[in-house]
Length: 164
Image (cartoon, rainbow, N blue to C red; front, side):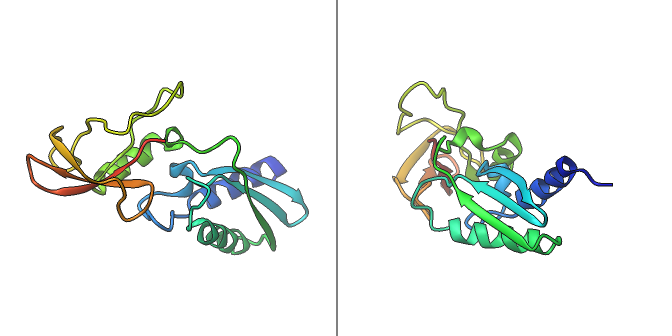
């Protein structure tokens, strides 16, 4: 017999394995936006997400993908709620998520101290060659949560997932 706790853990794993629509190299669990999955009744699940920022255009796609994954697993009623508190920060990205970002050619955010403002212009390593000689080209890249940089050593452009 499957207990509610075991079923919730299984459903959390399924929801967490859904790829991020904007960064499909990461799952929602690795990105740290999946906050909770819990049974709220027979055949009913509530999933809680915290977006990377309040205007995140991918939130509806995340919710639809989670619903599809869980209904495909036999859960007919899936409610996806958005919560903004506590806010998401880049510290929520798992170590595996950071590794995957770097392997994908995106400089991952560095851990923040959580004790104050995050400096805007930080020295960071090129995900291609490892050089710290990089230049900011644009504060925004393909998504608002990334900046566009260029490595002055290998001359390759790359995205940097900004620290929040």
